[in-house]
Length: 97
Image (cartoon, rainbow, N blue to C red):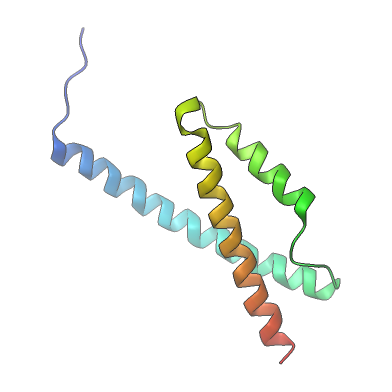
């Protein structure tokens, strides 16, 4: 049995569903980053932890099955982590002003 070829509209609808899920996951990740900022502030810890960041990037990149996507995913998760750190900087700076 051959796979049915999907239409452009069907593929776009799938992307829309995935994007909606990703938006929810992004928001959940940023909410968690706020909690991390609070813990770092309370314990006087730096925002940037090179060892932790590299471990998270490597661990998550290894979850990508298709090797063609791994470097793109590495760039994606690195960008998301940069946004998390920027949020933490904003929150911690606001608390110190």
